[in-house]
Every structure is written in structure tokens, then in C-alpha cells.
Amino acid sequence: MNIAFERRGEGPPLVLVHGIGHRRQGWKPVMDLLAKEREVIAIALPGFGASPPLPQGTPYTVDTMMSALAEFFAEQNLGRPHIAGNSLGGLFSLEAADRGLVSSATALSPAGFFKGPELRWAATVLRTSRLAAHAPQPLIGLLARSHRLRRAMFGLIYGHPEHLPLEDLLGDARALRDCTGFEPVLRAGRGVRFTGTCEGVPVTVAWGTRDRLLLPIQALRAQQRLPHARFVWLPDCGHVPMGDDPELIAKVLLEGSSAPLLEPAGTA
Image 1 (spheres, rainbow, N blue to C red):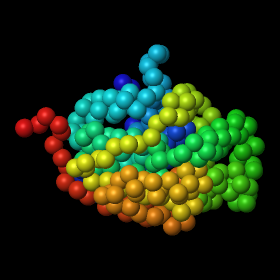
Image 2 (cartoon, one colour; image 1 turned 30 degrees about the horizontal axis):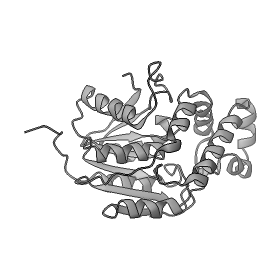
Image 3 (tube, one colour; image 1 turned 90 degrees about the vertical axis):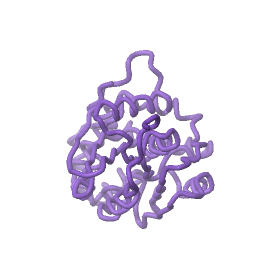
Image 4 (cartoon, rainbow, N blue to C red; image 1 turned 30 degrees about the vertical axis):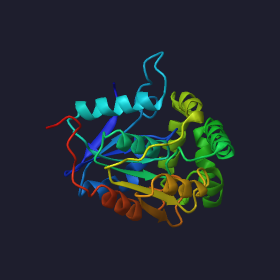
């Protein structure tokens, strides 16, 4: 499967997985910080960013995405890497840990812990944001030059969109507008809840206190589901926290991926 990625740094491999409608460049604020201690591989999920969609007729299910990740790990000779993800990528990170594909998982505001009304709220926000992303880029750029309007336009996704360069926000808007995987993933995710235990794999779950997309009440459910996981609140951070506080997020990811690498399943 053709997955676009960026790879840099040296050390134990750490795979980074973005959320729905996002792109691998969303990890840009923390890439250099992580690459000082890890070999960092930021991927674009199929149908998002520069990665082509899944082959026609292939459903966007968790099983499909786990197979795609396992195939990518094998192609890149990563063995059983560490993984970290945000939102949808956080759910995939936990699933990869539960299935023994990775050596540790760090999930930033992971999907999979919502109830019906919360899911409908998140889907409405995402679809509205995607609709707004179809506005002319010069208009979005003009409006976003005002920090007040930038917060109004992007504040349901980012805690502090004013911290991000305007060109990065415009790139994120284009990625959300153009991604072919958006609707298939959103439809497939309606019935998905994380029910695993991640037994034997170190797990960190971190949640932004300003998350307005996947509300922090869901963090409490994640704690109940994974009582042995390390849990971290991210003060003053939103749903996509990497640009809100890069130093804190890098610290959480490095600590979450500090366990020794595990041998792949079936290795003697």
C-alpha cells in the first residue's frame, strides 16, 4: 500500500499518525524536537494528505487500517515500533497496541470513547470545518490574519491557532478540503468504540483541557477503559495540541515511547 511519509532523526522508531481530515505535516511543530532522540516517521493515512485512497471497494475499517500499518511497518523494516497518534490516529495507535503491532502507544485525544450525542457534535464540527475550507484560499488567508478571527475560524480544532504560521493553517484547510478519505472514514467511525486492553504494551493517553471536539469527559472513559495506562492532562491545549505547546507534546511523546522495543509477534 502506498503511504506517503516523512522520516528523520535517529534512535528507536516512532511512527506518528494524524487525525481525520489532517495530514502528516500536522506534526511539524514537534518533529525536530522528537528527531533529536527518535527516528521519527510521520505518515499520511490512505485518502489523506499525499497518500492515495484505498483501492476501490476496500472499506475504511479499523481492520483495514491495521493491515495497512502492519504492511507499512514491514516495508520500512520498523519491526515493532513505538506509535503516537492524534484523534483518529490516537484510536489507531491504541488498536495497534492492543493487537501487538507496536512497542508502545501514545494517544492524544483519541477517538473511540464518545457517546452518540458527542459523536454527532464532533461530526458536525468536522463537516462544517470542511465546508468552510472550500472558501477561496485568499479569503481564508485574509480573515485569518486577525488573531481574533483566526481563533473563531480554527478554535474548535486548535487550542491556540494564533500560534501556528498562517501558511500551515492554510495547508491544513486545503488538506481537509481535498481529502478523499474524509466521508468514508466518518461514516465507518459511527459504530467504532475502543474496547481493547493493550495488555503488555505501555500506553499513554493525553488530553487537552481545551479540547472542544472530543470533549474531556471522554478522557475519563478512556481512563476507565485503560486503568493501567499513564494519563496526562495537556493544560491549555486543544484537540490538535502539537502547535499549542510543542515542548510539552514532545516531552509526552518521548516519555511515552521510552520503553524498550519489543520483538515482533512470532519472533523466537
